[in-house]
Length: 412
Ligand code: HSE
Image 1 (spheres, rainbow, N blue to C red):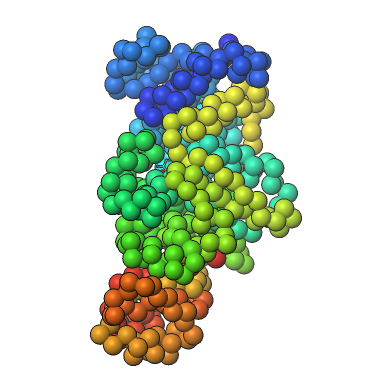
Image 2 (cartoon, rainbow, N blue to C red; image 1 turned 30 degrees about the horizontal axis):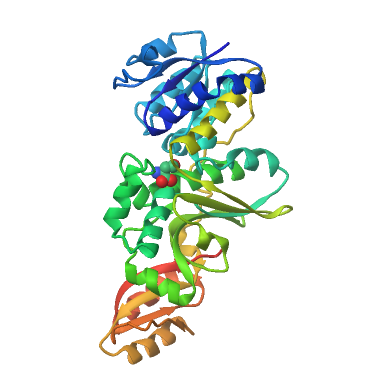
Protein backbone atom coordinates (compact mmCIF):
# COMPACT_ATOMS: atom_id res chain seq x y z
CA UNK A 1 0.00 0.00 0.00
CA UNK A 2 1.35 3.42 -1.01
CA UNK A 3 0.68 6.17 1.52
CA UNK A 4 0.04 9.62 0.09
CA UNK A 5 -0.51 13.04 1.64
CA UNK A 6 -2.38 15.86 -0.08
CA UNK A 7 -1.44 19.40 0.92
CA UNK A 8 -4.34 21.73 0.15
CA UNK A 9 -8.04 20.95 -0.10
CA UNK A 10 -9.18 23.73 -2.42
CA UNK A 11 -10.65 23.26 -5.91
CA UNK A 12 -7.87 21.02 -7.27
CA UNK A 13 -7.14 19.29 -3.92
CA UNK A 14 -10.82 18.40 -3.59
CA UNK A 15 -10.68 16.93 -7.09
CA UNK A 16 -7.57 14.88 -6.28
CA UNK A 17 -9.15 13.23 -3.22
CA UNK A 18 -12.39 12.69 -5.15
CA UNK A 19 -10.62 10.87 -8.00
CA UNK A 20 -8.36 8.84 -5.70
CA UNK A 21 -11.36 7.71 -3.63
CA UNK A 22 -13.67 7.10 -6.61
CA UNK A 23 -11.14 5.15 -8.69
CA UNK A 24 -9.20 3.40 -5.92
CA UNK A 25 -9.54 -0.09 -7.38
CA UNK A 26 -8.96 0.86 -11.02
CA UNK A 27 -5.89 2.87 -10.05
CA UNK A 28 -4.57 -0.04 -7.98
CA UNK A 29 -4.97 -2.34 -10.98
CA UNK A 30 -3.01 0.06 -13.17
CA UNK A 31 -0.10 0.68 -10.80
CA UNK A 32 -0.09 -2.68 -9.03
CA UNK A 33 -0.61 -1.23 -5.56
CA UNK A 34 -3.35 0.43 -3.56
CA UNK A 35 -2.90 4.19 -3.10
CA UNK A 36 -4.17 5.42 0.25
CA UNK A 37 -4.65 9.06 1.26
CA UNK A 38 -3.18 9.07 4.74
CA UNK A 39 -3.26 12.80 5.47
CA UNK A 40 -4.81 15.95 4.02
CA UNK A 41 -3.29 19.25 5.08
CA UNK A 42 -5.51 22.32 5.24
CA UNK A 43 -6.05 25.13 7.72
CA UNK A 44 -9.83 24.73 7.33
CA UNK A 45 -12.09 22.00 8.68
CA UNK A 46 -14.03 19.69 6.37
CA UNK A 47 -16.36 17.76 8.72
CA UNK A 48 -18.50 16.48 5.82
CA UNK A 49 -15.61 14.93 3.91
CA UNK A 50 -15.67 11.10 3.75
CA UNK A 51 -12.07 11.26 5.01
CA UNK A 52 -12.65 14.01 7.60
CA UNK A 53 -10.61 12.05 10.18
CA UNK A 54 -7.48 12.27 8.02
CA UNK A 55 -7.33 16.08 7.93
CA UNK A 56 -4.55 17.84 9.76
CA UNK A 57 -3.43 21.42 10.19
CA UNK A 58 0.14 20.36 11.00
CA UNK A 59 2.72 19.91 8.24
CA UNK A 60 4.81 18.06 10.84
CA UNK A 61 2.37 15.15 10.65
CA UNK A 62 3.30 14.72 6.99
CA UNK A 63 7.02 15.39 6.96
CA UNK A 64 7.47 13.30 10.11
CA UNK A 65 5.55 10.31 8.79
CA UNK A 66 7.99 7.93 7.11
CA UNK A 67 5.17 5.84 5.70
CA UNK A 68 4.12 8.73 3.44
CA UNK A 69 6.23 8.38 0.31
CA UNK A 70 4.35 10.70 -2.08
CA UNK A 71 3.15 14.20 -1.27
CA UNK A 72 0.73 16.11 -3.48
CA UNK A 73 1.06 19.89 -3.26
CA UNK A 74 -2.06 21.68 -4.47
CA UNK A 75 -2.00 24.65 -2.11
CA UNK A 76 -0.88 27.12 -4.75
CA UNK A 77 1.30 30.18 -4.17
CA UNK A 78 4.94 30.20 -3.10
CA UNK A 79 4.57 30.31 0.65
CA UNK A 80 4.50 27.95 2.41
CA UNK A 81 4.36 25.61 -0.61
CA UNK A 82 8.03 26.11 -1.50
CA UNK A 83 9.30 25.37 2.00
CA UNK A 84 7.03 22.35 2.41
CA UNK A 85 7.90 20.86 -1.00
CA UNK A 86 11.61 21.41 -0.46
CA UNK A 87 11.46 19.68 2.91
CA UNK A 88 9.52 16.75 1.44
CA UNK A 89 12.04 16.25 -1.37
CA UNK A 90 14.98 16.55 1.03
CA UNK A 91 13.35 13.94 3.24
CA UNK A 92 13.19 11.56 0.24
CA UNK A 93 9.49 11.88 -0.55
CA UNK A 94 8.35 12.25 -4.15
CA UNK A 95 6.28 15.36 -4.81
CA UNK A 96 3.52 16.00 -7.34
CA UNK A 97 2.32 19.56 -7.81
CA UNK A 98 -0.09 21.59 -9.91
CA UNK A 99 1.53 24.80 -8.66
CA UNK A 100 2.86 26.71 -11.68
CA UNK A 101 4.04 29.61 -9.54
CA UNK A 102 6.24 27.22 -7.58
CA UNK A 103 7.65 25.41 -10.63
CA UNK A 104 8.24 28.64 -12.57
CA UNK A 105 10.04 30.27 -9.62
CA UNK A 106 11.87 27.31 -8.06
CA UNK A 107 11.79 24.50 -10.62
CA UNK A 108 15.56 24.25 -11.21
CA UNK A 109 16.32 24.11 -7.49
CA UNK A 110 13.60 21.57 -6.68
CA UNK A 111 14.50 19.35 -9.65
CA UNK A 112 18.11 19.35 -8.46
CA UNK A 113 17.09 18.23 -4.97
CA UNK A 114 14.81 15.55 -6.46
CA UNK A 115 17.71 14.28 -8.58
CA UNK A 116 20.11 14.22 -5.63
CA UNK A 117 17.58 12.40 -3.44
CA UNK A 118 16.56 10.07 -6.31
CA UNK A 119 12.86 10.92 -5.96
CA UNK A 120 10.30 12.28 -8.40
CA UNK A 121 9.19 15.88 -8.72
CA UNK A 122 6.35 15.86 -11.25
CA UNK A 123 4.14 18.76 -12.37
CA UNK A 124 2.08 17.74 -15.39
CA UNK A 125 -0.95 19.65 -14.03
CA UNK A 126 0.98 22.91 -13.76
CA UNK A 127 0.53 23.65 -17.46
CA UNK A 128 -2.67 23.20 -19.45
CA UNK A 129 -4.81 21.55 -16.74
CA UNK A 130 -5.95 18.20 -18.14
CA UNK A 131 -3.84 18.47 -21.30
CA UNK A 132 -0.83 16.15 -21.38
CA UNK A 133 2.04 18.46 -22.33
CA UNK A 134 4.98 18.06 -19.93
CA UNK A 135 5.29 14.33 -20.57
CA UNK A 136 4.88 14.59 -24.37
CA UNK A 137 7.50 17.35 -24.56
CA UNK A 138 9.89 15.51 -22.28
CA UNK A 139 9.34 12.06 -23.70
CA UNK A 140 7.42 11.66 -26.97
CA UNK A 141 8.99 14.68 -28.71
CA UNK A 142 12.41 14.19 -27.13
CA UNK A 143 14.10 13.45 -30.47
CA UNK A 144 13.12 16.88 -31.82
CA UNK A 145 14.60 20.31 -31.52
CA UNK A 146 11.54 22.29 -30.49
CA UNK A 147 11.52 25.26 -32.83
CA UNK A 148 8.57 27.05 -31.32
CA UNK A 149 5.62 26.80 -28.98
CA UNK A 150 2.56 29.01 -29.30
CA UNK A 151 -0.50 28.64 -27.20
CA UNK A 152 -3.41 29.74 -25.13
CA UNK A 153 -2.40 28.80 -21.60
CA UNK A 154 -4.89 30.58 -19.40
CA UNK A 155 -8.47 29.35 -19.27
CA UNK A 156 -9.82 32.30 -17.30
CA UNK A 157 -8.78 34.96 -19.79
CA UNK A 158 -9.89 32.85 -22.73
CA UNK A 159 -13.24 32.33 -21.02
CA UNK A 160 -13.55 36.10 -20.38
CA UNK A 161 -12.62 37.11 -23.95
CA UNK A 162 -15.11 34.57 -25.27
CA UNK A 163 -17.94 35.75 -23.05
CA UNK A 164 -17.26 39.36 -24.09
CA UNK A 165 -17.40 38.47 -27.78
CA UNK A 166 -20.13 35.84 -27.86
CA UNK A 167 -22.47 36.97 -25.06
CA UNK A 168 -21.62 40.66 -24.96
CA UNK A 169 -20.86 40.16 -21.27
CA UNK A 170 -19.03 42.88 -19.37
CA UNK A 171 -15.44 42.05 -18.38
CA UNK A 172 -16.20 42.06 -14.62
CA UNK A 173 -19.23 39.76 -14.98
CA UNK A 174 -17.25 37.28 -17.09
CA UNK A 175 -14.45 37.30 -14.51
CA UNK A 176 -16.93 36.71 -11.66
CA UNK A 177 -18.34 33.72 -13.58
CA UNK A 178 -14.83 32.30 -14.13
CA UNK A 179 -14.20 32.60 -10.39
CA UNK A 180 -17.50 30.91 -9.60
CA UNK A 181 -16.56 28.01 -11.87
CA UNK A 182 -13.22 27.60 -10.08
CA UNK A 183 -11.07 28.55 -13.09
CA UNK A 184 -9.51 31.74 -11.74
CA UNK A 185 -6.53 32.01 -9.41
CA UNK A 186 -7.05 33.02 -5.76
CA UNK A 187 -5.91 36.44 -6.89
CA UNK A 188 -7.41 36.75 -10.38
CA UNK A 189 -4.97 39.57 -11.19
CA UNK A 190 -2.56 36.71 -11.94
CA UNK A 191 -4.90 35.56 -14.72
CA UNK A 192 -5.95 38.85 -16.27
CA UNK A 193 -2.54 40.47 -16.07
CA UNK A 194 -0.92 37.50 -17.78
CA UNK A 195 1.28 36.20 -14.93
CA UNK A 196 -0.36 32.78 -14.84
CA UNK A 197 0.16 32.22 -18.59
CA UNK A 198 3.68 33.63 -18.31
CA UNK A 199 4.59 31.10 -15.60
CA UNK A 200 3.29 28.27 -17.77
CA UNK A 201 5.27 29.25 -20.88
CA UNK A 202 8.35 29.64 -18.62
CA UNK A 203 7.91 26.04 -17.44
CA UNK A 204 7.59 24.76 -21.02
CA UNK A 205 10.56 26.80 -22.24
CA UNK A 206 12.69 25.60 -19.30
CA UNK A 207 11.77 22.01 -20.12
CA UNK A 208 12.46 22.12 -23.85
CA UNK A 209 15.48 24.44 -23.84
CA UNK A 210 17.08 22.87 -20.73
CA UNK A 211 17.67 26.05 -18.72
CA UNK A 212 15.39 27.72 -16.21
CA UNK A 213 13.40 30.62 -17.62
CA UNK A 214 12.32 32.91 -14.79
CA UNK A 215 9.04 34.86 -15.17
CA UNK A 216 10.74 38.12 -14.24
CA UNK A 217 12.82 37.87 -17.45
CA UNK A 218 9.74 37.46 -19.64
CA UNK A 219 7.76 40.35 -21.07
CA UNK A 220 4.13 39.90 -20.02
CA UNK A 221 0.96 41.78 -20.85
CA UNK A 222 -2.55 40.82 -19.76
CA UNK A 223 -5.95 41.47 -21.24
CA UNK A 224 -7.06 44.37 -19.03
CA UNK A 225 -6.42 46.93 -21.77
CA UNK A 226 -8.27 45.01 -24.49
CA UNK A 227 -11.49 46.86 -25.30
CA UNK A 228 -14.66 45.65 -26.95
CA UNK A 229 -13.76 47.93 -29.87
CA UNK A 230 -10.44 46.09 -30.33
CA UNK A 231 -12.32 42.79 -30.31
CA UNK A 232 -14.71 44.09 -32.98
CA UNK A 233 -11.89 45.37 -35.17
CA UNK A 234 -10.12 42.03 -34.85
CA UNK A 235 -13.29 40.40 -36.16
CA UNK A 236 -13.46 42.84 -39.12
CA UNK A 237 -9.80 42.08 -39.85
CA UNK A 238 -10.63 38.36 -39.89
CA UNK A 239 -9.58 37.02 -36.52
CA UNK A 240 -9.92 36.99 -32.75
CA UNK A 241 -7.90 38.44 -29.89
CA UNK A 242 -6.33 35.75 -27.72
CA UNK A 243 -3.85 35.84 -24.86
CA UNK A 244 -0.95 34.11 -26.58
CA UNK A 245 2.15 32.74 -24.92
CA UNK A 246 5.01 31.93 -27.19
CA UNK A 247 8.57 30.72 -27.01
CA UNK A 248 11.01 30.11 -29.85
CA UNK A 249 14.72 29.76 -30.41
CA UNK A 250 16.37 32.56 -32.32
CA UNK A 251 20.03 31.73 -32.81
CA UNK A 252 21.40 31.01 -29.32
CA UNK A 253 18.69 33.00 -27.54
CA UNK A 254 15.06 32.47 -26.64
CA UNK A 255 12.25 34.75 -27.71
CA UNK A 256 9.50 34.41 -25.15
CA UNK A 257 6.49 36.51 -24.22
CA UNK A 258 2.85 36.50 -23.18
CA UNK A 259 0.55 39.16 -24.62
CA UNK A 260 -2.87 39.58 -26.21
CA UNK A 261 -2.55 39.08 -29.96
CA UNK A 262 -4.63 39.16 -33.12
CA UNK A 263 -4.98 35.56 -34.33
CA UNK A 264 -6.38 35.03 -37.85
CA UNK A 265 -9.40 32.77 -38.23
CA UNK A 266 -7.39 30.37 -40.37
CA UNK A 267 -5.24 29.55 -37.32
CA UNK A 268 -6.90 27.02 -35.04
CA UNK A 269 -5.95 28.95 -31.91
CA UNK A 270 -8.55 31.58 -32.90
CA UNK A 271 -11.31 28.99 -32.38
CA UNK A 272 -10.33 27.88 -28.89
CA UNK A 273 -13.38 28.64 -26.78
CA UNK A 274 -14.15 29.05 -23.11
CA UNK A 275 -11.84 27.49 -20.56
CA UNK A 276 -10.06 25.38 -23.17
CA UNK A 277 -6.33 25.76 -23.78
CA UNK A 278 -4.42 24.81 -26.89
CA UNK A 279 -0.74 24.56 -27.61
CA UNK A 280 0.90 24.26 -31.00
CA UNK A 281 4.39 22.83 -30.78
CA UNK A 282 6.70 22.66 -33.78
CA UNK A 283 9.52 20.16 -33.66
CA UNK A 284 12.16 20.03 -36.39
CA UNK A 285 11.26 16.43 -37.21
CA UNK A 286 7.67 16.11 -36.01
CA UNK A 287 6.33 19.28 -37.62
CA UNK A 288 3.52 21.04 -35.76
CA UNK A 289 1.53 19.14 -33.16
CA UNK A 290 -1.56 20.47 -31.36
CA UNK A 291 -2.49 19.80 -27.73
CA UNK A 292 -6.03 20.77 -26.82
CA UNK A 293 -8.24 20.37 -23.77
CA UNK A 294 -9.62 21.85 -20.58
CA UNK A 295 -6.96 24.13 -19.13
CA UNK A 296 -8.51 24.68 -15.72
CA UNK A 297 -11.18 23.37 -13.37
CA UNK A 298 -11.41 20.87 -10.54
CA UNK A 299 -11.49 17.42 -12.12
CA UNK A 300 -9.57 18.16 -15.35
CA UNK A 301 -6.60 19.50 -13.36
CA UNK A 302 -6.94 16.84 -10.67
CA UNK A 303 -6.84 14.09 -13.29
CA UNK A 304 -3.36 15.24 -14.34
CA UNK A 305 -2.23 15.37 -10.70
CA UNK A 306 -3.45 11.82 -10.00
CA UNK A 307 -1.77 10.53 -13.17
CA UNK A 308 1.52 11.94 -11.84
CA UNK A 309 0.94 10.22 -8.50
CA UNK A 310 0.44 6.97 -10.40
CA UNK A 311 3.64 7.64 -12.33
CA UNK A 312 5.49 8.12 -9.04
CA UNK A 313 4.28 4.71 -7.91
CA UNK A 314 5.38 3.14 -11.18
CA UNK A 315 8.77 4.92 -10.98
CA UNK A 316 9.46 4.72 -7.28
CA UNK A 317 12.84 3.08 -7.69
CA UNK A 318 13.80 4.58 -11.03
CA UNK A 319 12.86 8.25 -11.05
CA UNK A 320 11.57 10.09 -14.11
CA UNK A 321 14.54 12.05 -15.33
CA UNK A 322 12.90 15.45 -15.81
CA UNK A 323 15.57 18.07 -15.28
CA UNK A 324 16.78 21.52 -16.32
CA UNK A 325 19.67 23.66 -15.18
CA UNK A 326 19.49 26.97 -13.41
CA UNK A 327 20.12 30.11 -15.45
CA UNK A 328 20.82 33.82 -15.02
CA UNK A 329 18.43 34.85 -17.80
CA UNK A 330 21.19 35.76 -20.25
CA UNK A 331 19.68 33.28 -22.74
CA UNK A 332 16.48 35.37 -23.02
CA UNK A 333 16.45 37.88 -25.86
CA UNK A 334 14.92 41.31 -25.17
CA UNK A 335 11.27 41.54 -26.21
CA UNK A 336 12.11 44.86 -27.84
CA UNK A 337 13.85 42.93 -30.61
CA UNK A 338 10.97 40.54 -31.44
CA UNK A 339 9.24 41.34 -34.70
CA UNK A 340 5.48 41.46 -35.16
CA UNK A 341 2.95 43.20 -37.36
CA UNK A 342 1.05 45.61 -35.08
CA UNK A 343 -2.61 46.61 -34.82
CA UNK A 344 -3.07 50.31 -34.05
CA UNK A 345 -6.32 51.93 -32.99
CA UNK A 346 -6.07 55.74 -32.94
CA UNK A 347 -8.35 58.76 -33.08
CA UNK A 348 -7.78 61.94 -35.06
CA UNK A 349 -9.74 65.01 -36.16
CA UNK A 350 -8.15 64.53 -39.58
CA UNK A 351 -8.13 60.75 -40.11
CA UNK A 352 -7.04 60.84 -43.76
CA UNK A 353 -4.04 62.96 -42.92
CA UNK A 354 -3.24 60.65 -39.96
CA UNK A 355 -3.42 57.60 -42.23
CA UNK A 356 -1.11 59.21 -44.76
CA UNK A 357 1.41 59.85 -41.97
CA UNK A 358 0.97 56.30 -40.67
CA UNK A 359 2.04 54.98 -44.10
CA UNK A 360 4.97 57.38 -44.20
CA UNK A 361 6.13 56.16 -40.80
CA UNK A 362 5.25 52.46 -40.82
CA UNK A 363 5.29 51.73 -44.55
CA UNK A 364 2.30 50.16 -46.26
CA UNK A 365 -0.47 49.51 -43.70
CA UNK A 366 -3.62 47.41 -43.89
CA UNK A 367 -6.54 49.67 -43.00
CA UNK A 368 -9.43 48.14 -41.01
CA UNK A 369 -12.91 49.65 -41.05
CA UNK A 370 -16.25 48.71 -39.57
CA UNK A 371 -19.73 49.88 -40.46
CA UNK A 372 -20.40 51.74 -37.19
CA UNK A 373 -16.96 53.34 -36.82
CA UNK A 374 -16.90 56.96 -35.66
CA UNK A 375 -15.47 59.44 -38.20
CA UNK A 376 -12.33 60.05 -36.13
CA UNK A 377 -11.22 56.41 -35.90
CA UNK A 378 -7.96 55.48 -37.59
CA UNK A 379 -7.31 51.75 -37.46
CA UNK A 380 -4.64 49.76 -39.28
CA UNK A 381 -2.14 46.91 -39.15
CA UNK A 382 1.49 47.71 -39.82
CA UNK A 383 3.98 45.48 -41.57
CA UNK A 384 6.32 43.36 -39.43
CA UNK A 385 8.86 45.36 -37.43
CA UNK A 386 10.74 45.13 -34.13
CA UNK A 387 8.87 46.31 -31.06
CA UNK A 388 11.46 48.99 -30.35
CA UNK A 389 11.21 50.30 -33.93
CA UNK A 390 7.42 50.25 -33.64
CA UNK A 391 7.44 52.25 -30.38
CA UNK A 392 9.70 54.90 -31.92
CA UNK A 393 7.44 55.27 -34.94
CA UNK A 394 4.34 55.19 -32.78
CA UNK A 395 5.71 58.06 -30.72
CA UNK A 396 6.19 60.09 -33.90
CA UNK A 397 2.66 59.14 -35.01
CA UNK A 398 1.13 60.68 -31.85
CA UNK A 399 1.76 64.07 -33.48
CA UNK A 400 -1.05 63.20 -35.93
CA UNK A 401 -3.38 60.97 -33.90
CA UNK A 402 -4.18 59.91 -30.36
CA UNK A 403 -3.08 56.25 -30.13
CA UNK A 404 -5.53 54.40 -27.87
CA UNK A 405 -4.62 50.78 -28.39
CA UNK A 406 -1.82 48.64 -29.84
CA UNK A 407 -1.85 44.85 -30.11
CA UNK A 408 0.59 42.42 -31.72
CA UNK A 409 -0.43 40.15 -34.58
CA UNK A 410 0.51 36.58 -33.66
CA UNK A 411 3.25 34.75 -35.58
CA UNK A 412 2.19 31.16 -35.06
N1 HSE B 1 -6.26 30.18 -13.38
C1 HSE B 1 -5.75 29.19 -14.26
C2 HSE B 1 -6.42 29.33 -15.62
C3 HSE B 1 -6.01 27.84 -13.66
O1 HSE B 1 -7.43 30.04 -15.69
O2 HSE B 1 -5.96 28.78 -16.59
C4 HSE B 1 -5.27 26.72 -14.31
O3 HSE B 1 -3.90 26.87 -14.21
